[in-house]
Image (cartoon, rainbow, N blue to C red; front, side, top):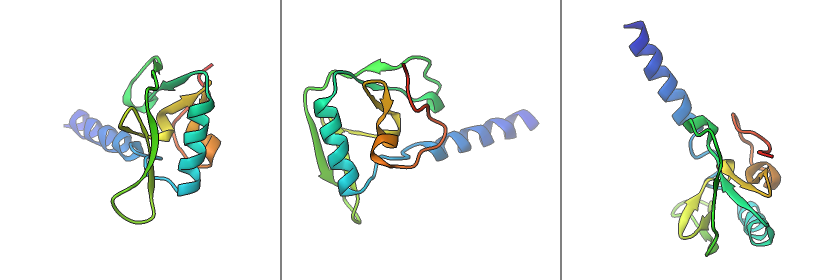
Length: 110
């Protein structure tokens, strides 16, 4: 029973970290857009999800859109909403660069 409770608690904690910087301010989103456009390498890496290695993202399209509610904005890479906490440009965490507070992620993946 203790193992089941532990597993449920672990899943709850890790899901609490999900979508840390998916919704950001307009300024943060625009800055993220420019960084992605100017970068040599964009990678996705979610340590909290259990990923062991970053995944190279081939950027064909990047945009910023207003979220469906409030004054929140989203960065889309290849028409998919990107959580800045798990996106790295030139090896550096995009959320940290634009000033979005994150927990449980590496600052860099060099």
